[in-house]
Length: 98
Image (cartoon, rainbow, N blue to C red; front, side):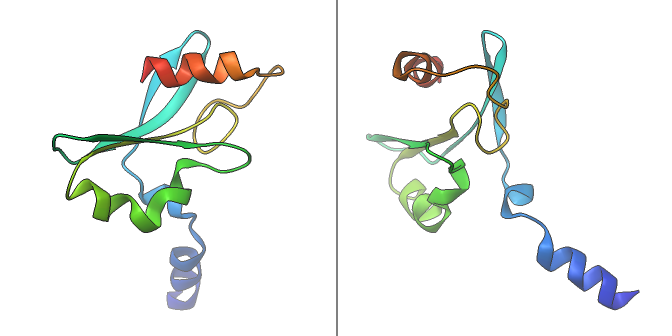
């Protein structure tokens, strides 16, 4: 039983530990997280085949000095799966909503 529990803990995806929220943009939900405060705001997009967790290595450190927003494009992370071809304009509308 203990071995099974350890295996489950070490195989959970890192995204299970992210305190993300979602925002609705049209028929889609976009995963995002905001952390920190400061004069500057940093905005990180995760695209291609990446989710916002790709920013984990620098996210917490940057949030000590600035407001940091990161999100997963539609089709990545916990955002809604893509149901059509997305153009750059479609992706920009999602970013603008955040």
